[in-house]
Figure 1 (cartoon, rainbow, N blue to C red):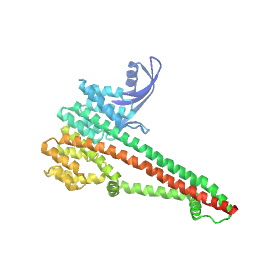
Figure 2: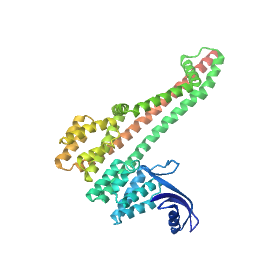
Figure 3: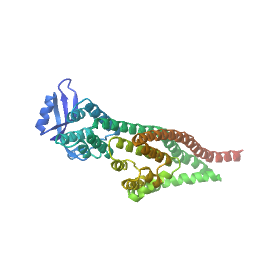
Figure 4: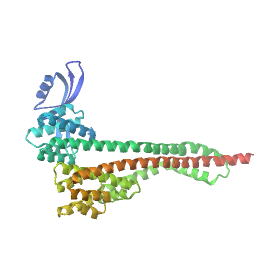
Length: 406
């Protein structure tokens, strides 16, 4: 069954609408639209891909966010909990989804499920939309017969991740704006105001203070070779991107980030929170420890820790308790290891992992607040020093000229 993008006019009110519809042929698609009291004005067939479906000869730049997936997941869980069959629930989701890319992917998922495929396998055909964590949890829910509960849990996790990401961005937005504002002011002074003032001093043919000479030399160099400076910066960024794109460079960069003061400890806490929440949720959903660890390794987002996780998985595969290879890796903090050890002893490792994830989330929030509180005065002081030096470099020759005139 093909999928068609359409633009139509509603019979009642004459409102223009657009969306997607599945049908065996363009004629069947137009017939279905007329049955829905829509008069099609444009109809294009789309073609399936692993990331959804895109129109022939075009590229799809629409973006599916974590919040979109979370909302869709919660809606599916509610429909299944109300007793609606899976195929009908997916059909209802298609009508409720506003993102074209997600809507097309759901069309394909619905078709695969109607053909007899399991939901997890149908979702796995769209890896750019549904992550391995999502697919494996759905598969675990299908295997254990608790798909609704797993979907509710997945929605909670994704909503929490979206909330944390938004909180981090909003917290760092003000310091980032201050940095850009400071750079803009200093650049404007250096490239526009200072050259006009220094030209006046040069016409006086008097000896200038050392600070003023340095300022004039700097502004002249930047004005004359700005394209060279820009090219060097661009080249360095390109080389850095190339180095990070290689496995050894990516691993070295991720390891370096963990050693940066303040930021490194914050990165470790975020990784530990993601690790604990994902592992706890996977175990709670019915996956075995080995399968859960394989999925967790895909969401750590740090190559250095991912390599340490391979050693942890090897230790668990040999029959060792999880806490022992975690401690030997030297990557994970003592609190996480201690909580895992307590969870294994008590037989409640899932709840213990989810609890420690909440602790690390709160610690990340407090650390971010402290970091922002530290950054704001530092930015103001640095900006004040630069502006003060510029003003001093301008005032010193003016005072000398006044003294000479006197």
